[in-house]
Length: 328
Figure 1 (cartoon, rainbow, N blue to C red):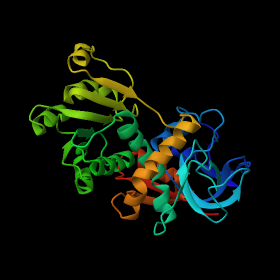
Figure 2 (figure 1 turned 60 degrees about the horizontal axis):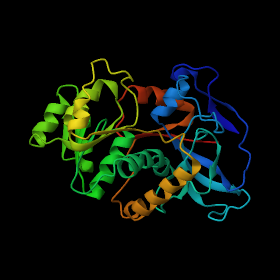
Figure 3 (figure 1 turned 135 degrees about the vertical axis):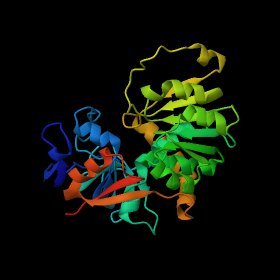
Figure 4 (figure 1 turned 30 degrees about the vertical axis):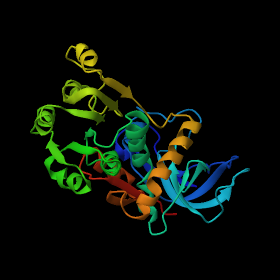
């Protein structure tokens, strides 16, 4: 099969379409003819040599895909050949064929394109895990989402809105409107405003209950300042760096009973991912059907233009997901 490959770590220009071994069918797995995949920050990090695939996963880039089931492994009962599915992968989405455990595949809504379906799994499952499994967000609580116009950010806004939370986001000014349209109460321009001061102003000095953060070290002290008593900081990525330069005052954690929870999804166990899939779909299936939830697509590239798609993501211009169409 053909796949998007790279021979050595580097910039977007190292990507090319070449020949790879088609995944070997396994018990409880389905083989999918991939029609579309989508970019994630993890893909750019893996391309740079900073985030290798977990043991046993495909070294090919791509953490999600959408396509048509073409073969069934032993013991598969949930799917049949011809079914349209999408799902979360440990790797291998940037290819003509991908293998996925039957418990991780999700049905594609009848009126969705493959591109829409490819834009959904990683960001919605990441956001759902952070808000429901980890933060245990409750109706009426306040949530701050950093990078609100990102793929995960746009998914998190919608999920939190449907859960009855009050949502605030940080984003550059040009990206505020999409966040507000999706249900954010207020958007803060992180380039010109101190988001901690703005959060305190917007909440009458109380702060927020939960923060979803992708930036890490540069935002740490402001995040602590932004949290109210019993607040939870969910750390999803380290885009700004891992080391906090200023001294930490841990008394804030005791005085306000704060929780710091770090998480990744890619290396979680199969059982965990299946449970997450099931609980998410129970929450979201009807909402997707009724358009209460929807994947937000910024742009679509042909997979021969994967280098340009990666460069575009790294320019931080996208609002929502960047999709790749896989053409045989």
